[in-house]
Image 1: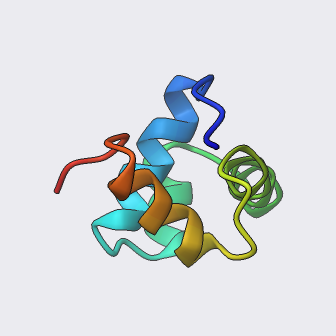
Image 2: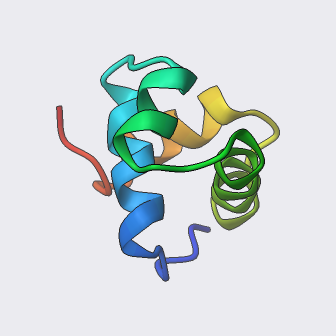
Image 3: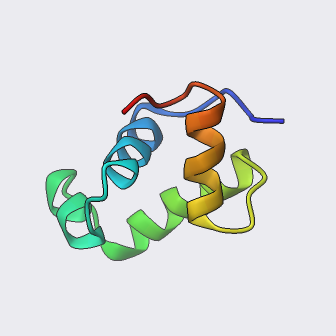
Length: 68
């Protein structure tokens, strides 16, 4: 089950990842450090109960959190 309490930043990062943007693009776009990015990614994996970032993206797409 997906935790539906995603922050604005988590949603934006998730969308950027789903669109295939690399880490450095995302960190620059949102003025984040790599550690902040990793924290957001870890949070996304936990909220989607995913073992990997790729699995979290698939689950987000399947559950309607992101539309490409």
